[in-house]
Amino acid sequence: MKHQTLDQLQSVADVHAEATPLIATRGQRLERWAQLLEQNPDRCLGALAGTEYISAEVRDRMRSAGSPITVAFEDPIFRAQGLKEDTYGEAKRFFELTDWQLHEIVCHCHVGATMPARWAATRVRAAVSGRFGFFAWLRGVFML
Image 1 (cartoon, rainbow, N blue to C red):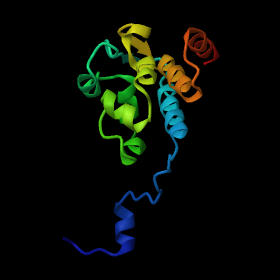
Image 2 (cartoon, rainbow, N blue to C red):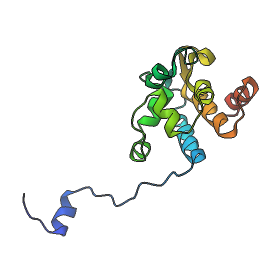
Image 3 (cartoon, rainbow, N blue to C red):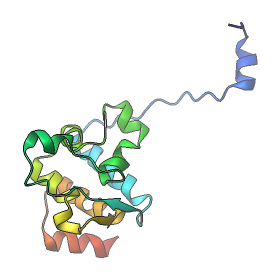
């Protein structure tokens, strides 16, 4: 290990003194998730198949590479605040969602095998407002 002065370190290191912003409430976490999805609104995301038909144990371990949950897990702030993996059960725990709410966001029965990220963002925002349903979804699609 080589000893260097602070001035020497600053000339070679890319140091950021920013603290991770605290996203303390459920609503703040869900809103950030929606914003992350909207950063690339046309990104094609994979849906999870049949979440309502699978036992709770299996459902909690479900994942799909490139799902809306994956977008959340890709965020370093969410990982720093405790999002451990991109599984259904971990998203349910971290975002404080019911099975029904998370089903509305990620299940293929609502969107097919894939969905654009902007659709997922609309569904996440519906979880914030508590307003799920076809007309709430349709309104969100046309307002983006």
